[in-house]
Amino acid sequence: MPKAPDNVSVNPPTDTPPDRLSLDPRSEHYDEALLGRGVGIKFNGQEKRNVIEYSVSEGWIRAPAGRSRDRFGQPMTIKLQGKVEPYFEDSAQSEGAEGAASEG
Image (cartoon, rainbow, N blue to C red; front, top):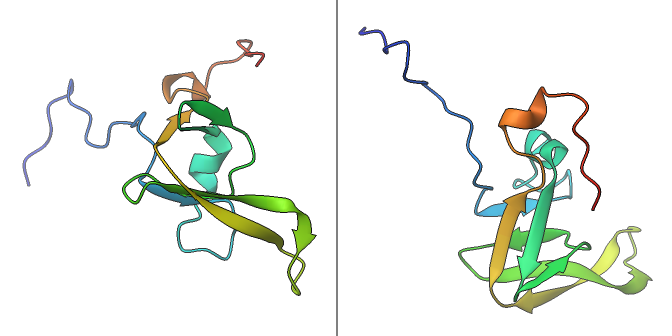
């Protein structure tokens, strides 16, 4: 098998969040490593901090509907349609860096 040149990374870290991501560990779209980096969501031009799940290709987010819970204790959610723009709060290169904390 041919070896990749030293200056080419085989699996480069990506700064593009996945098309779909969920905070619920029971979901197939849950990814703890990505969530550890911090994923922010801009929905219709406004930053949202209460997003439970999102899909860029389908254009929706799930957010809690008040403080109500279902019979299993999970928050009741509402699906909102619109333009979804996910981004990483921490870049892939700064994961190992220390001392540079951002306030926001």
